[in-house]
Image 1: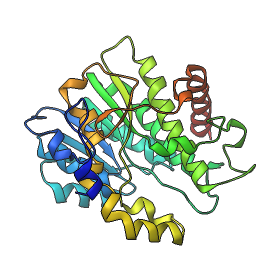
Image 2: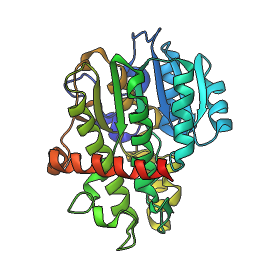
Image 3: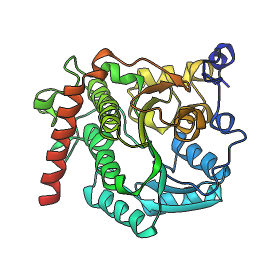
Amino acid sequence: MSLYGLLAGRGASGFGYGSTATDVTEGLSLAGQSMLVTGCNSGIGQETLRVLALRGARVIGTARTLEKAERACAAVGGQTLPLACELSDPASVLGCVAAVKHAGARLDAVVCNAGIMALPELQKAHGYELQFFTNHVGHFMLVTGLLAELSVLGRVVVVSSSAHRQAPRAGIEFENLDGSKGYSPWSAYGQSKFANLLFAKELARRLATSKQTANAVHPGVIKTNLQRHMSAPLSVLFNTFGPLALKSTAEGAATQVYVATHPALAGVSGRYFADCNLATPRADADDAALARRLWETTEHIVAKLRAS
């Protein structure tokens, strides 16, 4: 545990900054439940896979390649199903959706964990800035493709970040989704994480007449391979001060595992969590018109991809 984790207290949930994914599931049996985790092969995705399987869930673990997913699933034991899901490749996402349907799984939780961060140079996928496409559009395709497979009490957990506050003032630059009118690594990352947050909120509104839920989470700042694209000065800071302040992987996985599994959150939807407690995002996260516009824009993007 980091020094900050030792000093930090616990919130209303009984958990806090230093809680781990194992802590928040202590005493829970997930036997008979099926859950899907994207990015299961490293970092907090791997820990989420491990703990869910440890508690008895059947876990569908996805990674960019089948080989990576197979290695991750083999390492944790339990009931697992490895699948490929490269979020920047629509064909791979649709293939994953088809495979889940073929497996006949009723999903009790979908944890949208995978992502890329702060690419130093502008990169694109299918004409869109790569972080926006991978972190948001790919997960949008996956989740909307699997809505019919959600169980009656199914939960969608979308991993956002406190970095959503670094999104542009407009929140989403709809006229610059390809990055051609200006690109900043952290602003683009922030936009993708804000899109994750808006997606969870809008999905919650669309699920409001059911008992299914959708929430967004900030996992904390964790030393994982997400930082591989950082510039040298930031990388040095992370390596120097990380042991004092950064969360461990076990602590970083706690919030998404808590929101995906804890009985206390049955029926809680459209919220934002950090450190296993309710948190407050930037004000325009509750702009329903903005979230609806993003949803409709993403639907249009997906429709064009399917038609091409």
